[in-house]
Image 1: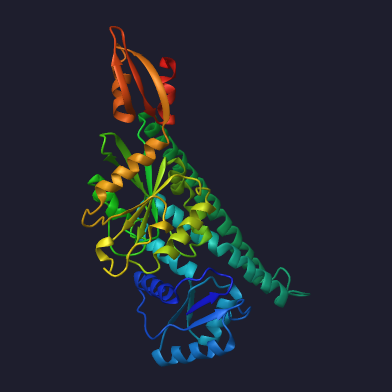
Image 2 (image 1 turned 90 degrees about the vertical axis):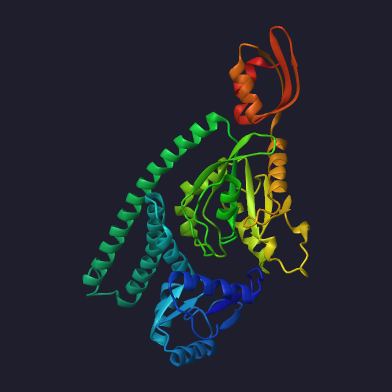
Length: 407
């Protein structure tokens, strides 16, 4: 069931419903019949959809003997309950569907912790809403403090305790990840973070640029756990390439909050490598959702290079309008097309963020000279009997190592 609110950004309805079908199939559902859609000024408080559409859904459920109906938006507890009573079948909304896929995909301890936290955080307010409704309808003399109230209150306390325990465990993971980040920073490697809509080809690009063997399959949220690998720029300097969880339209806020420890990798990045599946008709709209999510987590100002991926799948009569993208490069991660140009662009954008320096390095400081050669850009170099004069550019995270030798 797809419903578009008039206040929402327009996106091709076909693309929305195709994505919902893919998510359903990824979760293990068999999709039957044709989707039913409705454009709404505001959701119906009781059923989300209007009564006319509700009758159409009832007929479709009977015709196909469906035991599950999916809604492409978030439902309130009362809407879900009313729909289940009216349709006599299980109702699943979009956040629940995405959380289910994440639960299936989580492999590492960190991933499972984050998914469990998101599930409980999504459940708690819904439980609270149900309790509020119970109080209104069942409250009064002779009912307060009864078995139902006590049971709901016990369940709420249990969930809050579980949320706190999960947050404590994730905080430990966060601190460990912070130690690893500091160790990497001390080595001076620039960090480039892959971001993009789910299934845009981020893992395939990571493998192509680094020789890694990260899981890369044609399915939403194929990988949830962050992967960091070394890659090399055209000038010979090494950099770290980090892959993170893919974004998606209407990503549940509980997931964004739960994956804070993972998304901190993005905050540490010197550059975001934004991957767009340019073969998708909805590519620009999906880019909007990625940019919106990045803005929500405070990353709108990060330097960006955009990899317009899967050009090998682009119909020949569909030219690319490069004006919609930041520092774009057309590539195919699967075939290798355009990867040299992409590395050139990454190098250009990284170096643009470096600070200019003039150094007088003693010849005895061979280690620092080699570090500058491997991590920075030497524009001019002149040797004397006692030292070497260097003009060039270096990342700000390494500049402090050379401050004592400024000319």
